[in-house]
Length: 304
Ligand code: NAP
Image (cartoon, rainbow, N blue to C red):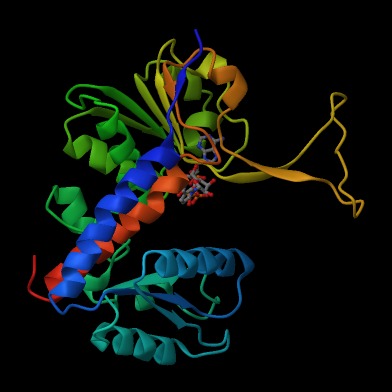
């Protein structure tokens, strides 16, 4: 039987309406609410993400501040910009967009963000609180995975959850959030695959969360019958014809499309529930970021 495909766009739209009301409530109490992105230089991927955040802020009618010093700025100058954003009452949350240029240390910038404006949980203080199971700004993408599971009525206690990927921003915090909810969590990564052990773990998963950034990594033989599969991956791949050759667009360049890390069409026939890409976790990530921004606004304005 084919899996239930989770309609993450519908979840995001539902959340949007809930959060709009909270924004109005904050504004009616005199609080200003906004997000500042910090991009040093002109990284293409980071600029794409910035555009998306700016559009989202417009749509939700909150302030947006674009801090974009040139790539040759000194670390000291960038820290000064962060301090200005920390002191700016229009800025509820600061979102550093990486990669930073090589001469600028991630830690120097992230450690200078006010912990009450750290809406994607980059600061070690907030990551520490997350690890201890204390209330903090849980990072957006990992929280989006938890939100999906909550809305699908998952009972975390004792659930066998396997996470593929252990990056500091996605895989590791997902594992911590699930562990904090008393799931039995296994975190796998490239060395698990290199040791030939990935299938051994993933086939035991009631819930399989994949955040590796490798298109087609998860095939049906890696999935337990009836499992809940959450695909966090976002990959651009060439569109191929039935012979495996790239299909060209009108400019003669290979057509591309966005896919996750899961072989969706094949795994859908074995899983119980599955999230699609596009229109999956990514759709809810922005909502989680906004939820954290509202929380930050409330803390800063004594409304929490
Ligand atoms: P990342 O920093 O590259 O981390 C990828 C992780 O996957 C690493 O832990 C890596 O292990 C592991 N990995 C790579 N190949 C593997 C394999 N063959 N078998 C098992 N593990 C493997 O990426 P990220 O920032 O965590 O992002 C992961 C994916 O999620 C990307 O596709 C990204 O675009 C997407 N993403 C989506 C959203 C969203 O809102 N939907 C948000 C953020 C990211 P090692 O570290 O040991 O090499």
